[in-house]
Length: 91
Image (cartoon, rainbow, N blue to C red; front, top):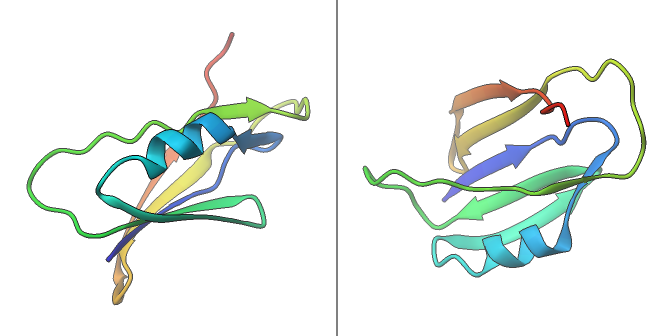
């Protein structure tokens, strides 16, 4: 099992529509939101490229947003952790 751990930018939450779209993908086993962190559990990954779109909604205005992180790791071997950062897109 693979886990994608998404820490949304400060002041943002995942939309319910986004959760529904992710849950309808056959590769997604479960989604949890704990302490404003989104955990997406995948059955497994293979060599095939996968794209996941997580729609966020701004609920609090925050100035000087800092990059947030996305962590991807094997549930049974978390030592192989991959971390990426992302920033907000200006409107």
